[in-house]
Image (cartoon, rainbow, N blue to C red; front, side, top):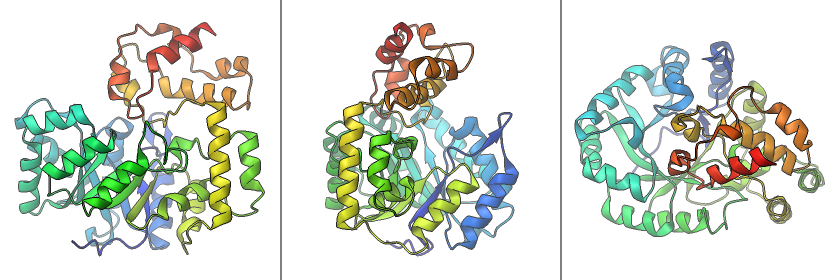
Length: 364
């Protein structure tokens, strides 16, 4: 198995691109792509639902039309919620190629697999279909992104030997978390001989927007940014081939490039510091939301759940008062409008009790 086109370990996650009036800011995205490519990086990651479908077209307009196809590596995904039946899969795939403006994907991943979505993929023969698409040259490598237990991952990889790479949530906050099971899932992937792609290395910004006490620990190292410690932590594992960063601005891009231009794993002092930061964050008990917005996509009330959780986490971290958090909540539909349908929790990769937390926030 060869991934020779990949130049460096930092990948450009195109899930959180800067938007203006609901549209991707093409000028900013063009600048970021150019800086990324000029620094020797070339891996881009998207999915059909990112930014309400605008991520794929932004890839087409800002990357595929401006750079030769051999210059970049592109990953896309097959999301179980984007098709109903087996007959829908190939048309969906072909539409993704067209939206991205390419003739093939370097990597095509089964998106956010868990026990339930895996069953749907099996019933719809998704794995067989994707294998045929690879045989046709429309996919170079098959992968999966995963949110469930190590036991489930072990079962999937045993049944699906054509999977070549596994995308896992790995960061220094979640690595030994019994709910996320990052370490256990990483060990399973290694056991099956799979390379690992890391997603959520800064946990949706939680490892950048640190509580003051935690920030002071990293400040004491007099080294890089908070994000740099998180990215380097994730990239230090031997079987990690790629670390995705959802960069939205040039400032993020420049900082991330700096962390990987000449990559060095965390040293012992830095690892001890991240251990202390982890302990502090867990004392605060922030909501483990990464801002993926899958919940908002299915909420019948249109509640901006991740934005509410982001501001509430700032309150929990003692950055602002609860009154200030409430003032920062988006106007209109709010936590108190939850009807308790539970659809949000079904799609949450972090298994958050969203309904319970919205009720708690509404009544506080």
